[in-house]
View 1 (cartoon, rainbow, N blue to C red):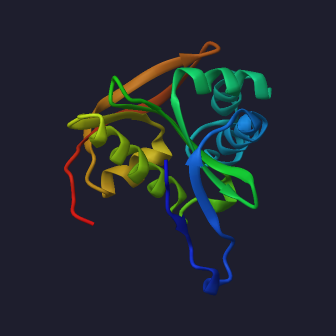
View 2 (cartoon, rainbow, N blue to C red):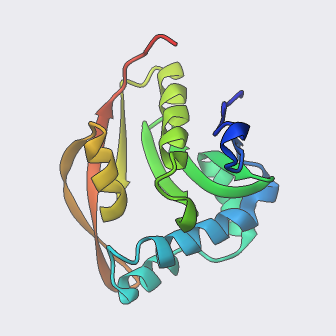
View 3 (cartoon, rainbow, N blue to C red):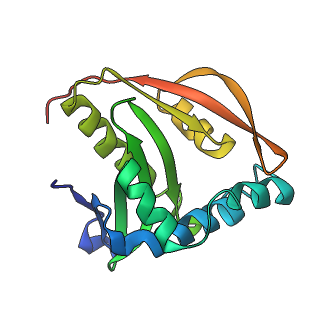
Length: 175
């Protein structure tokens, strides 16, 4: 798979590269997940909710490597380290997870991962994509044209968390 890189070296910003995950990325995925939940979602969920959410996945590389066998995992890297990732269930046309390192949120990393996921789904004949988005992610996706299918409540370690079920119709675009 060939994926684009961004931003330009001229901007002085770190160069972000996009690719499929490798087993060596498991430890970084664990850290991105943990920090995205505990820090990145702080304005949207209570400490109790974030702690319960973060506890759903161990902070161990092996757990995330195992997930790479279940989902197509797309990675955003900077200097060879994972700074964001997306897990895609291609047969179901569903984005299972999307996490970005908190200090790099709102820089287009998550959006670019979604573009790559949408392209993969189109190549596999999917006409739509769904995601169960956190409050934080849902706001951004709704502004980008995703359709709200309703609010869901999930229980994680006896704590209730709100999320939005969203959908987007896929259409091939000329590039």
